[in-house]
Structure formats: structure tokens, C-alpha cells
Amino acid sequence: MEIGETIRIDFMGVTFVFEPDDTGIATIPIFWLAGISNINESAGAMNIIKRQSDHFEDRANGARPDLLIIHYTETRTLEDAEDYFLGRKPHPGGGRVSTHYMIDRDGTVIQYVDDDKRAWHAGISHWNGMDDINSHAIGIELVNPGRKYGYEPFTAQQMQRLVTLCKDLMARYGISPHGVIGHSDVAPERKSDPGELFDWKMLAGTGCAVWPQPDEQDRRVAQDYVRDESSLREAFTKVGYNPKADLQSVITAFQRHFYPEAFKDPEQVGKINGAAAARLHWLVRNRPHL
Ligand SMILES: [Zn+2]
Image (cartoon, rainbow, N blue to C red; front, side):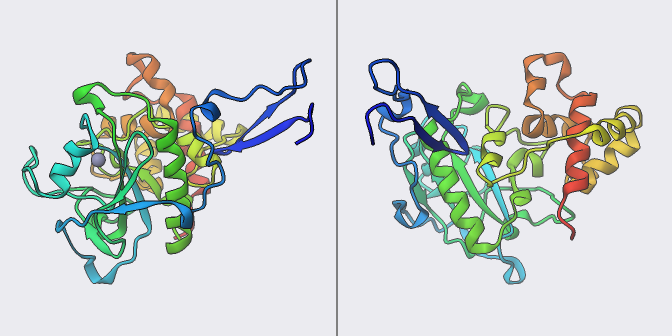
């Protein structure tokens, strides 16, 4: 690089431009200094540690994965979650649980169940007319203390590894960005992970999820959703949410994923407004044809 040259860095879908200052030295961003320099990491190069869990079975009817379900562990450490996935300790919720992948806060990726097997992460859930989500999904757990132990933002290292992993799995199994969703989307009455601190917009910027960009048309139709509960319910069902789930729980799950602004004001949580409804309509009209 020439002295005085402008540096452009693409990082997780965002282009950072660093202009040299009058010393001719461009400012290097903090995360670069922190050692996250593997910006163009390819999945093939990603080091995935394998620790086999016996908490799995065959996918029903030989299903192939067409959903990626993002979770948080709600544990203080990776080891605490691993205790459950490897059966070293019984899960407090009863039953046995597992996941395909877990990403630690430092970016370490561990695989517990082969992609072609059915891991036990989603529990009772529903999406897009399907009930057996575990047969249709790959589960990805991000280590986070969650609501139980003090919910924290996800780390840049976790998000970077998640992007690499998602890109690889989406390419390998033909999974659409519309199929990358949260646990709370498929189980809105029971679950709130990965929660409102998970940056879906950033993930969508990398092509690994969708983020609505409503226009005038969306804002117009959104008024019907705000006024009329049945049209709101119908829209949620078209996007994939369980038509039988409690409507306020569905609104809250939708806000966690697509309208996290709501969580700045507790009064807004669980209540639809025009801006959130416009994003919902964008999703309705851009959903993949089934
Ligand atoms: Zn979960």
C-alpha cells in the first residue's frame, strides 16, 4: 500500500473507508488492533472443532435442512452449555438437548452433531406450516449469558464466525436468506433468543438473512395491519409465524427480529405500530414463492 493511500475494508457487509491524516498514516480501527484481522476468511479455512454428542437421530423422512435457527445458550460459559449437549449434566428443562454448532465469545466454533442428522435445539416449534423444525433445521448456538445471567451484546468475533458458517451452510444446502431465523421466531410463546441485541440487519447485509426496506406501498398497507387484528395475523402467518400462537407473543418475537427499536421503550413491546407493520408488509411481499 502506498503512503497516503485511502484504505477500504469490507467488514461484515459494511465498507469502512480510512482516509490518511496529514501524517499520511490511515487510522486503523480498534477491532483490527484487537486481532480480528481474518476478514476474508473462507469456510474451508475455518477451523471447526468436532465434539460428538449422542443427542441426535435421523431427520424425519430424510429431510434436508432448509432453515438455520440462531440461538443463544443462556449460560455463563461454553462449557456450561456443553455439559447439556454432551450429556454431562441433565438439562434443567428436562429432556436431552443438543445443537449442530456452537460459537464461543472468542469466535471458537465447535460442531456436536453432523449436518445430516436431527439435533435437539428447537423443541416444540412451528414455521411456515411445519411443526418438526428440528428435522428441517441446522441449529447454531451463540454463547451468551442471556436473560437468566445478564444478557450481553454478541462479540464481533462471534458475528464474524457466524457469517462465515452461515455462508458455507447456505451454499452447501441451498438455504435461502429467508430461512435464517431465530429460535423466538419458531417458538414465540416459549423463547426469546437470540434476542433484540442480535444484529439481524448486519447479518442481512452479508446476504445471510433478510432485512426489510419498506417503501410507500408498505407504509400504506401497514395501516390495515395496525387497525385490523385479523389482517395482522394473516400477514404474520404468511411470513411463517405460527397462526395458533398468542398474537402478542408473535408481535414481540417479530419486534426482537425485525423491529428491535421497540425495546428502547418497554411500552412499545408487544404492540404493533406503523413502522413495524411496514416492515412486516415488506416481508409479506418479498417472501419466497413456495
Ligand atoms: Zn434457543
